[in-house]
Length: 469
Ligand code: SF4
Figure 1: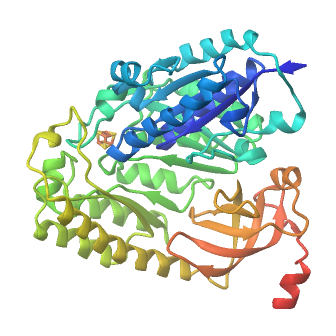
Figure 2: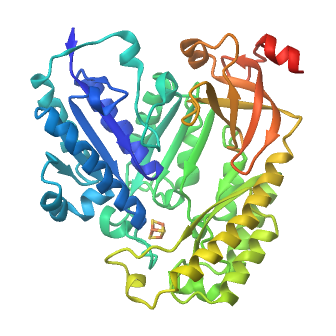
C-alpha cells in the first residue's frame, strides 16, 4: 500500500519525548511510515525546547536548515511544536514564514488531526515492515532509535506547573498544573505494555505533585497501580520536585519492585539565599532530609540532580556551598547549566552575574562532578550488570546503548549475533563492565534475556574479543 512518511525531530526534555511519541502514534494510526531523514519525509515535525537560550537558537537554526528542503520540495509540510512554538508563535511566523504550521504544547490533538488530514495528499513511498518499525523519537537531532523505541513507553501524567521558579519559563508556556485522570494514565500505560514496552516512564513537569482530579490518589498510589500492569518490568519517572517527596511516599515507592534504584532530585543550588531567590520552596537542610529518606528506603540508591550556576545574585560564597555539596560525592550524576535569561521570568530582570564569572564557576563545578561521576561508574568496573537495551548508539552506529537499573548508560560493541529484531525481542543484556567514564561505562555483552527475571542465553564472544581477552 502506498504511504506517506513523517520525520519527527525532538529537542529538550522527556515531556517533549512523550509528546513526540503521541505524534508518532497519531501518524502511525493515520498510515504514515516513519522516515529516518527529513529529506525522505512528506511531513517534518520539529519539537522544540526553550528552557535555555541555546535551545532556542538551535531550534531557529533547524528551521533555517529545513528551509532549503522546503524550497526543493514545496509540497513538504513543515510543522513546529513544543515550548518555543507556544512562546514564539507570532515571531516565528514572521521570521520563519516557510514554516507551514505552529502548534503549541496544548494543541497536540489538533496537530494529530492535521497530520491525519494531510495523509491523503501524500502517496509516494511503499510501506515495508522494516520502515514501519522505525520510530524517530529521542532527545537528539538524529532521532533514530529504531525497533527499540517501543521498549520504553512515555506516559504523561501531568502538564504545566504552578510553582513559578523565578528562572523557569514552563508555567508561561505550558500553563498551570493540569493532572490527567488516573484511569486515563493507567489505560495508556497498559496500552504501551501491550505494544511491547518493558519500561514505563511517567512524565510530568513536577511529576510527584500528581493528584488525580477525581481525588483517587496521589503519585505514590499512581505508581503502585501502574506497577500492577501485567508484564511491566521497569517503572521510572521524571522530573520530581524535592518539595513533593514525603517520607510516606518514598517508603511506598521503595516497595514497588519495578522502581529503579536511581532517583532524580533537582537541587539547583546548595545556598539558601539562592534557593529563596529561585523560589524553590525548600531549604538546603530540607533537601538533605529528603536525600536521607531516599538512602534509607533505597539502600545504595544513586541520586542525580540539576544545578544552575551564575543565577542572578550568586556570590562566590553561594557558589562555594554548591561546590562543597558536589565534592561531598553525593550525586551519581548532575546536569549543570549556566543560568540563561528567559523572557517573561522574574530573574531575567535582575542584575546578572558576569558571563565570564558564571563560565568559570561552571567549569569548576563540572570538573568536581565529573570526578565524582567517574568514580561512581568505576565502582561497576569488573562487575556484571543487567541493562535494558536503548538502541544503536547515536555517536557510533556500530555500538549499542543500554541503561542499567540505576540508569547508567553503558555502551557496548554490537555482539557477534546482533540482529535488530532479535535484540528488540530479547532486550535485557547482562554486560561485563570493562571501563568507566564521566558519561557512563563501556562493556561487553555476556547474555541476553527475553524477560527481566530470566537467566538469559549466552552471547558467544567474537573472535577478536577472545584473542584480546
Ligand atoms: S518546579 Fe520550577 S523549574 Fe520545575 S517546571 Fe515548575 S517552575 Fe519550572
